Length: 364
Image (cartoon, rainbow, N blue to C red; front, side):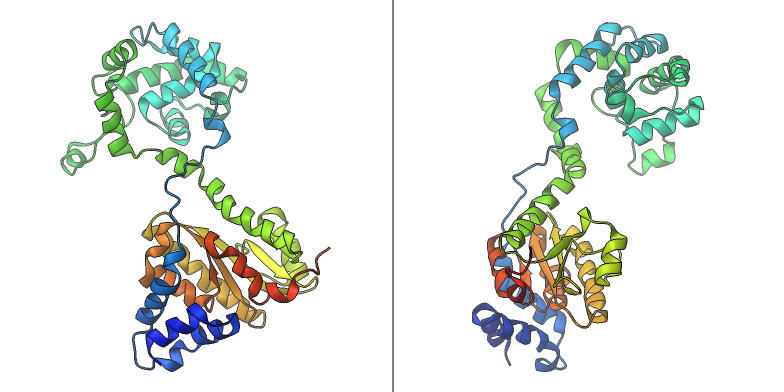
């Protein structure tokens, strides 16, 4: 068999013929580098159905309340006179007046909540519930007692008199401090100047360049994008009364006990007949090739679990241009799923493939 014949079967054959064709690759191409065969199959039959999703940005709910952020900023700016009168007591007073203002000072430093909590623990020997305070949580007695020291530490980190240092050796190798950025590289004087006069637009664009536009939202909201894929799959299965378990919404112990699936973490969906697992379905979104490559290995694990369960099918629902990486990402997924790979564009074809086809209409 030639690769062109294989491609023709996978593009035009029935699902039974397609699955059989993908399974036949090791036998039909003896002595050939099989990775290249699966890669070519993926490139011609599956890549054309991958649509981009880089143009949509997930916005987790906590980032949507711009007004609340501006209120907290106003408290921080007012108490510190637009950051021109900075002392530990002033910063502490702002946080005491509105705990949400802690977020403003943290962002000035450039730390994540965990990083700020760690530096406070290391230099002040206090436990600071950063996330809780930034969300407007109440100040405990212990936190109130620690606030002057916390405020002093924050003040000195920006001025360069406290916190962790970056050694000359590291600087020579291209590393900088998180305060070596346009709004803090001149200490509080620079912060105050930007607060009074505004951030020059070129500086904003420069920050986007090295910081990555929407990077924080992409990291924090990755689950929202993943849910789009899972939600669409769930709707399709429900509409056609296919029995399934969406594992993110069911106890893992129950899945293992009732359906015999033991792989951890469990696949996104377990398709079943009411008593036993009949198929394992995983949804994976990947915006870049490296992410796709890392996620591809998941399907090899599911294939082993499926073999243990009697050779039941493994199905993939993929999204994102990262899956255009065919040699070590999409190709292996096509192999491990015997060609049962779908995208939002081809999702309804899931209804034509075993075991979904045979189970339609039996769910309550």
